Structures are given as structure tokens and as C-alpha cells.
Length: 532
Image (cartoon, rainbow, N blue to C red; front, side, top):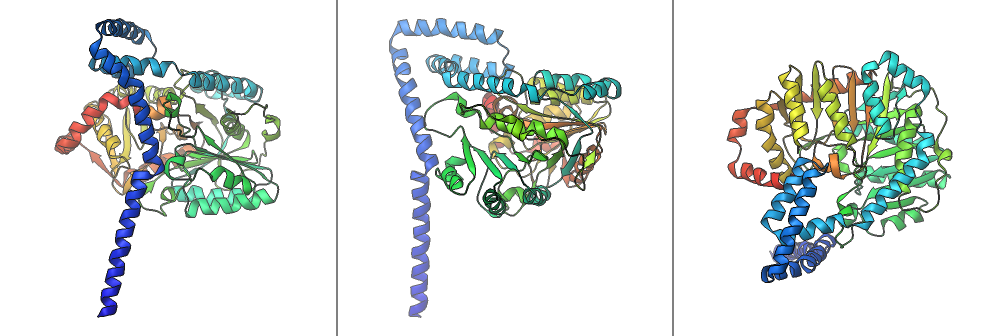
């Protein structure tokens, strides 16, 4: 009996320690301290202006005059209408704060420096990204209707198209992971990895084990991940830990407790390049939930592709562009542009055209959104879409509904179990308008859809990292591949149909029956939708 009481007491004591440890982590963890420091700066920066603005009439008149100038500027700018509306509401509601915040976000030398550096890197790479003459001839003769979009991706997105592309599609993260491991084991020259999220677990441990071994064998290994990982997923010492293993490692835009708009622009790309021979992209990060080894939101549905041949050059140069943003020495690009090996791996489909492309938040050109809009606007039979988020601007809403109204089958698959409640509430505010316009919306009942996939007319597809939300379309660095007339399009469409069988169609009645509080929250969030 005494032993039993002692065990119960010990168990209670351990539970209390776990709770105290969790509370300590919550109160004094990196994320909490980071947010607290930002709030202190925000108060210091704007608090004084608010106090002065409430007491000094002259300042109020000055703010009013500046507000008018800002509104005139906004009305004549190329910004999205919802971005403009957000600023108008903020300035009208709290003029001093709104004006100060607007001016602060525009006077950011770091952002301008970053933009100029990207332009410089693109100019350095231009010689390696010239389209082949025979590819242009193929587009003009055999794919005349696609010539315009390939021309746009090259002239505005800076990436060419390639013919007779080799592509393999992975309908699940587990499938991509297995192939990824196989290809990493074959690496002989270099391995480039660029991921939005890296989290310790089975997937990362398996990849790291190969990277360590390859580095010891003399393979050049470079690893880059987004700075948001430093908030909770990876220790600040992670790059040094990798360098001790022979792996070159960088953090893109580390999160710092200083107010800056460029921290809003994250590297959302997922790129793996091996020997310039194959490249991977898609929605799959390096964490266990992406391969369903860790269950967070039901079954995790994700997708990816592996590209072979000369098209790999574009992914190689995308990676080197991001890697060299903070470098001063010129990259030796020629070392990584490999003569194409015409042999293809088992399961890869060959033919047609492919245009890998990147999208930057600093070039005033929304390549990701315009490629999506082009597919929707030129569809002849159907457009099928998988996306984890649905936060749309007016152009996208109009294109989706107009396509449905002219007889195109427009179907969207979204998550039934969301990873972010607020994003789901906001997404549902678009359901009614789209459904009334003829768009068919489905939710994936087993769990969470993280795939970013378009297919259309049995001829074209896009697979990449680009969500249908403002952050992906306007604020993040992204990448994808536009695929035309390659047999892999059939595989992608088959996966869409298989996924559709596990979905529930959303009706207007379903929208009306949805939780009232969640509907109200979603409507309120529309004000700040351009930040999401």
C-alpha cells in the first residue's frame, strides 16, 4: 500500500513538473520573447505619435494632409484592391497610427537592398537561362496556343521552357520521400536543399544521415531553410552543427526581434537538386507530418514532382539565387550546370514542354497568380485544383466564377481538418460566392490537403509550392513547374479524381449551417486578408 501511495505521489510530482516546464517554456520561450520585443518596439515607435496626435491640433491637421496624399497614392498604385482597402480602413480608423505604419513600411532600405541584389543575381544567371531555339520553334509549331504563357514565364519570370521533359509525380509525401532517399544515395557531385520547414524526426534523421555520409565522401552539400524555423523548430546553433558535419548551411532571413517589413517575405520554396541530374519540388517539407509519420490534422495529403534533364538547370539556378543573396563573391555557376543525361529514371514520363519558374515578392510581377489565371481563363473543358488555403483577390474570384459560367468544370479540393483555424474560417467566407457562381467545392474528409496542384483539359498542369492565398501569391518566394502535353499530366489528374472520391461536396445549405461565430470571425478577418 505504501509503495502504491509513493508511486502515486511520484506520478503527481512528475505531472506537476511537466506543467511547470510547459508554463516556463510558454512564458520564456524564444517565440514569446520574440513577440514581446516586437510589441515593445511597436509601442515605442507608434505610442508617442498617438499621444501627440490626440493633444496637438497642428499634428492632426498634418496627419490629415498626409492621409490624403497617401490615399491618392494608393488609388493610383498597382497594388491589389484589397491591399488598398486594408490601408484605407486602417488610416480612416486610426489616422496617426495608420499613417505612421504606412510610412514605416515604405521606408525600408533593407527591402530595397534585397530587391536590387536579386536583380543583380538574375542578370548574372541570364546567360544560363536563355531558351533553346529549337524549343521556341516547337512552341510556335506544335504548341502555338501555349507560346504566350511560356513567353511570359521567360520574359517576366526569367525562366525558360524545355522540351521533351522528364517528370515523375508523387501523390503522397511518403512516395516523394522514398524516391528522394534513393536519389540522394546516388549523389556524386553536389546536393542542394532549400526548404521552408525542417523539423527533427524520422524523415529529417534519414536525410541527414545520407547528407553526412555524402559530405564525408567529398560531395558538396548545401542546406538552406527559412528563418521561421528558428522560432521553435530548430536551435539557433543549427547552422554551426551542420557545418561541423561538413554541410554548408544557411538560414534565409533569420527572425530577429526588430520591426521590418522584409521579415514578412519568407522563403516558402521546397527545392532539392542532386548533381544537376534531378530536381524535386512540391508541397512536401522535411518533417514527419508530411509523410504521415506524425498525425496532426488527420491524413496529410501532399504532392511533389521529380524533374530530370536540362529543366533541372532552372531549379539549380533558383537555389543559387537564394543562396547568394547575402554573398559578395560571384558564384561559379558553370560548375553546377550539367550536360543533360538523356537516360531517364524508371517511372518518369517524357515528352511535351515544362517551364520551372520562381516567384519573388520584390519584382512587382505576380508570376504565380498569373500562371494560375492563365490556366483558368483559357480552359476549354475543366480546371481542377487542390490547395490548402483559399484567400482570394477579386481577379481570382472573377476568373473562377466566369470560367464556371461559360461551362468549364471548375472543382476545388480543400482540407476538412485545417491546420490553422483562422485560415479555414476565412476560406469559408469565399465558399458561398464561388458556389453561387458555379464553382464546385469539396473538402478532403480524411484530413488536411497541403497539395498545390492545377490540372486542365488533360494537357496542362502545375505542381509546386504556391498556395491560393495572399502570402503565396504576393508576399513569399515560391516556385513551381508548368507542364504541358507530358503524359505525367494524366497521373496528376488521376490523383485528383482519386482524392475527390474521399471528399464531401460543399453546398450552399452547408455554408448556411456552418457555425455562426466562425462565420462572423471569418468575415472580420477579410479586413486583414492581404496579410494571410
